[in-house]
Amino acid sequence: MRSKKLLIMILMGGLVLLPWVGCGQKQTVEAPKKIYIGWVAPLTGACANDGQQMNNGARLAVEEINDAGGINGWQVELVYADDKSDPKEAANIATKFVSDPDIVAVLGNYNSSCVLSGAPIYNEARIPVVHVGTSPVITAEHGPYLFRISVTDAFQGEFVTKWLFEKGYKKPAILYENSDYGYGLRETVQRQTTLLGGKVVTQETYELGQTKDFTGILTKIKASGADSLFICGLYTEGALVAKQMRGLGINLPIFGTDGLYEQALIDLAGSAAEGISVCGLLLPDDPDAKIQKFMKDYLASYGNIPGTYAAFHYDAMNLLAQAIGAVGPDREKIKDYLTQMPGPFLGVTGACTFDKDHDCVRTTMKKLIVKDGTWQIAP
Image (tube, rainbow, N blue to C red):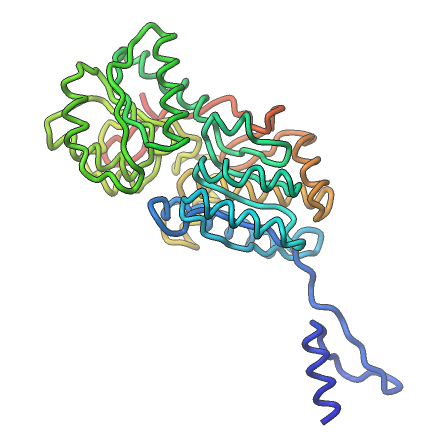
């Protein structure tokens, strides 16, 4: 009975009992050590598909890291949380993550409002976060512990608005999501249109995940005299808008940023997606060997083609692995490494360095268009 109790105590203490060796002595070893990374994004709600892609990208990176021996021999484990695209839930999760001393860094969030909600909590607790929120407002409120690996809406909005003007469109209508993300992108497009000598003829808004019927809004846009439509939102609503526009006989060219750049937009909109023009970093048929390996491995693991945000979290996890490998699983040292990286991080979304505001600096983006039912480089 005593030996049975002893065995139970040993197992509860995280030890593994090994065979008896010499002189009646026992030998024990500790269970393998792990590095814990918090992961937070929407797995339910209006943006669940995007969150699941991000989850898949991060998990794929972790699997590859662990299969290769881990980080300096330590295995990596993600601690998952679903923020439901809800800023209040994002703040609650941030509080849980920072209070767990085993979590050395965090990957998240998707929605800009959720990034802004968690930012002060992460900064106060001094835990580094790599996120993909795109709103320009985030730049001013980042603080020293947050790092943006995605491209800001300011950069994307200016890029696509210039492209719109190059195509000869000078009177866009703006349709924007009622959120920090939508506001920030709308302001950028409005400002850039004015700078280029054009005029935004109307601005209409909608609710993420709630607005399904855009008939009234699109009727206003049709009557406004707009020569194009800039959607400051995500692909689900973008697909609904495209289908309903065609149904109403509205043939305005549609432009947007990487929020629209998903295979799901084509799947949802069907032929109505033809001609939609966006900017993006990742093209599935890009011949780059690193990108093709990622595409192949992701498809084999999850059965579908990865989107931009799957790639962002794949890169973000590998970036954290690079930092931890260099300085160890220490929150402060990871932050310092990301702040003063010795050179660009080279991921499947391209080269990335962080500026003084901890925004990822990327020099180029691709002009993409839906043609013959697929995303292609725009002519």
